[in-house]
Length: 348
Image 1 (cartoon, rainbow, N blue to C red):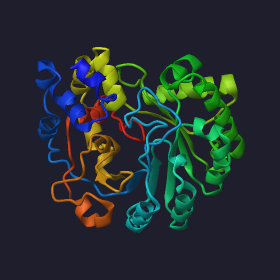
Image 2 (image 1 turned 90 degrees about the vertical axis):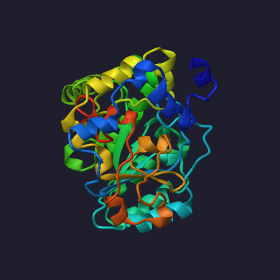
Image 3 (image 1 turned 180 degrees about the vertical axis):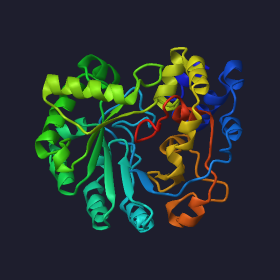
């Protein structure tokens, strides 16, 4: 199995990933199916509560190649959302129940239509979130974006694996921490992270190893104390996100012989309260090519919306999507373990 994975470009093939997650060995195969677990608590089939968040992956191109990245993003990725698909998204999201547009990647800032789209969405009065790796803003081509986003009230949610240089650089590459501190200070100077400004700045924590995130509130206070003491940096919130066994992180689990232990940990940490609030119930994920998914993780495994629901933005029908059955698999345990995990952090 390891040799197969080593030849598969860090598990970039969704079919291979699903096979590994479900059939790696006898121990993996014996784990209770996620659908059965949800059935036991009366949540199968899992149904949406209604589409409120429109999450768009606008391309896999990125200036970084982070070790935990479930998108397998990097400078060599060419998949990127076209203006035509953006325009189709504008038509779809012009619905009163959709209040938030969440832009992700890759580095979403690298899409050539990024600025145009934010301007168009701003006209609709929707709340906009941009998920940034911070370092992209430390380049001449994108140095105007902090002020551009501030002028349009964009919420910035950015990855910072830890408040120390050693652990951050270990996960995201040498020099990442220093660049991140530099950009956080720039954002603070504009007003981001300051309570009175209304400009929201959130940080995201992903575990470095094969373990679940610590308590979100306690870790947030640690981040606030250390970043203020060491750099005079402030921010609004911290989100702890569980690493799901997908792409590069799945490759790490297999190659380090941690997959079985990690999957068992996710299964035994299943929390019914977290299962009730999983993000796929009020979110729809749009791929760079316009394909529709229940979440960004299903997107990476090529598990499109199904069970009678449309699966492409060209055929958008919010009534059908609100009545769909959400696609589940073993990786979904990652969102229901412990305090839960979503793009907005812990769910309980």
